[in-house]
Length: 97
Image 1 (cartoon, helix red, strand yellow):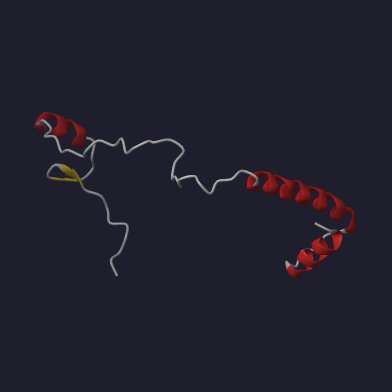
Image 2: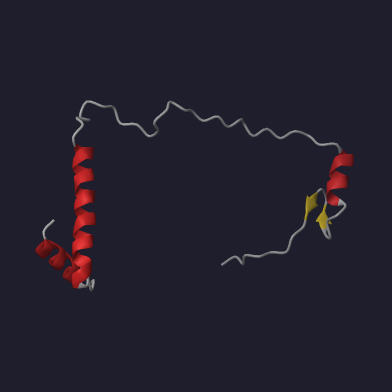
C-alpha cells in the first residue's frame, strides 16, 4: 500500500492519523498484505469443503429420563424455600407480552 492510499483510506474512514504514525501503519499493513499473498498461493480448487478439520461426529448421548428414588428427591428438595410437588418453585422473572 502506498502512502497516498493510506491517506485516502484514513480520510474515508474518518481516521486522524498523525504524520509520524503513517510509516508504522504502512509497514504493518504491508506485512498483512504479504501474509494474505502467502495464503492465496496454495491451489485449493480441488479440495472438498469441510466444516471441521477432523471427522468428528456428534458424541452426545440420548437424553433419557431415569426414575429417581423418592428419598433422593426429598433430600434434594429439603433445602428449597418453596417447592411444588417434586419441583423447585421459583419466582417468575420474565413477563409474558
